[in-house]
Amino acid sequence: MQALLDFLPVIAFAVTYWVTKDFNTAILVIMAAVGIQVIVTLVLTRTVPKMLLISAALVIVLGGISLLLKNDLVFKWKPTVLNWAFALVFIGSQFIGTKPIIQRIMQAVAKNEIQLNPADWRTLNLMWAVFFMLSGAANIYVAYNFEEAIWVNFKLFGLLGFTLVFMVLQAIWISSRAPGNETPNSGGQANKDSNSDESQQ
Image (cartoon, rainbow, N blue to C red; front, side, top):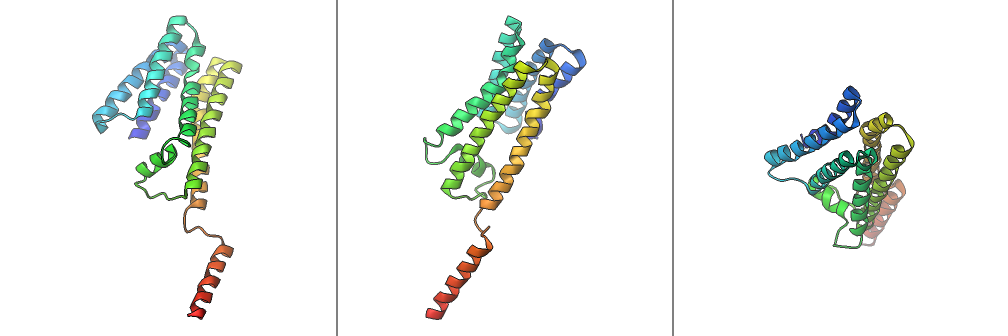
């Protein structure tokens, strides 16, 4: 349910633009949609994630400024500002606190079922930071170098596709690093050591 709610404002924005061909109308729709999203999330879960609040605030603030100044680029900066802010938070968590933020998030969601050693958690955290930096850079590149309609499609399909690909690669990487996924050689060496210990007893 939450995953669907997360995408509804962006879908509403894109559909409005496709139908009306008016960027300002689409901005008004997504501003209203994120407000509804926050309210519905609060009603359903009795809490609102900080990431959702930050994203909603950026949509409303940058959307309002964009409409006031009649400058579409102000609103187009929103994905970049959000992604780069997340990148800074993830990088900062490498040095602040006992665990990088990706470890805290994933272990809370998966109820500690995902187990990695500390070095791997830090590597995964940096992978997310790089992902956010690249997503932000890609968004602003498209915003400045392509026409409006292409940016709208990129916002819905491009960034979503980039995220899905990254998450698949992340899942494969986590699976390869999880405890128990030993190489045949390391497993064979472990067996040899075990047999050697038994022979000495």
